[in-house]
Amino acid sequence: MSTPSLERDEVQRAVAQALDLAASLGASQAEAGASAERGLSVTVRLGEVETLEYQQDRGLGITVYFGKRKGSASTADLSESTVRETVEKACSIARFTAEDECAGLADAEMMATDIQDLDLCHPWDIDAEGAIELARACESAGRRVDKRINNSEGATISSHRARRVYGNSHGFLHGFESTSHSASCAMLASQDNNMERDYWYTSARDAADMEDVEAVGRRAGERTIRRLGARKLATTRVPVIYPPELARGLIGHFTAAVRGGSQYRGSSFLLNADGEQIFPEWLDLKEWPHLKKGMASAPFDNEGVATRNRTLVESGVLRGYLLGSYSARKLGLQTTGSAGGLHNLVVTPAETMSPQDMLKKMGTGLLIGELMGQGVNGVTGDYSRGAAGFWVENGEILYPVHEITVAGNLREMYRGIQAVGNDTDSRGAIHSGSVLIDQMMVAGD
Image (cartoon, rainbow, N blue to C red; front, side, top):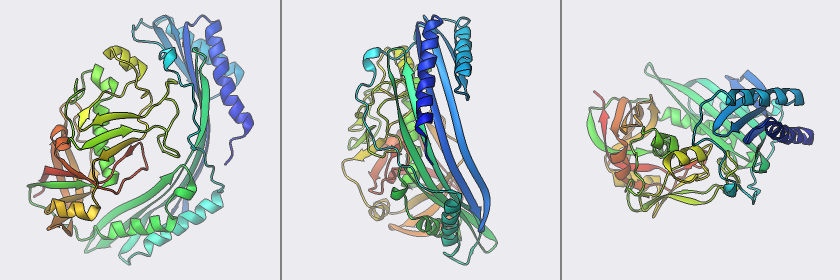
């Protein structure tokens, strides 16, 4: 799927036009972002095509400032006449809004000047027929794993390409192209009138870096089969292991708590925690925004601020927050180039362990396989999630378990991390291996 040069030029032209119009209408500052995206997604279920979707979207958003008054508007039409109408609408809104002393662009000296090529764009030469063939191969591999697999939620192949451009009245006007491709599969299996489900997926900027689609299907099937025969547990307090794909969410609760918005609103269990020991002293959290082909890499954030390598947690101690310019001003601090989110936060322990060694270190406890529900209180840190997984004794997995709840408090959970695995999952904005926590309440019968 190509993004023609005309389309690329159109996106940049729309941003430049919006900024020029805002200035001509009297705006003291303005910023605009535009994008053009194309995508293909195919889902096959039980060998038949269930969905086939083509995506082709364009959009522009403009924010203008008249002193400390702000107005925003957006459109999906990049024609010159519609861009003009959109800018006029934003200006009209700004004239009626209240002043906000923290409103405005990020400081000019923070703008990115060295726009690195981070190798984010790798178009996949695949059409609908090719995607259908891969999806069928993926699902078929999963269904062949075991005769107890008697149904499927399907296999999906997706490919997307986008160009995004951001500009503001500091003279900043830059953009870059990126791609993302994925393959996923979900299987269902039955035994003794009980049904279990599990899945697997792969994703990458470059399709050549993805797992083989048949391997994805087989892993989905194997994960489903190993959940058959699940038992219930008596309520107990034991160590718990989060596998990499779930450890990302565990760390994600921390990043949500240290975002500027949570801090200035006073809605964080880590309120004013800069300088506090949050994790064990052997653990760092480092943000590496310039990883080649990284799923969350970017040369600048959503405000044009240059992204930089940063140690957010050093020796377990919090060394700052995740700030855009607005939240930074609210807190009397400086932006950290975090407008729009994380840029590859990597969990970096002094030493890592293999998943097998982590089981041995845990001895007896719970290996989580799935989490359900949204029982996390961002203000108090109280944590309670429905779960399923595997009971472990003497470092060996004995049997699957279900219909349980894992509970604790995030502050205690973070301080109670005993080990991090070498099985790092880098498919998202947070890169982490498995995480072993010393004790959590596991509620069952």
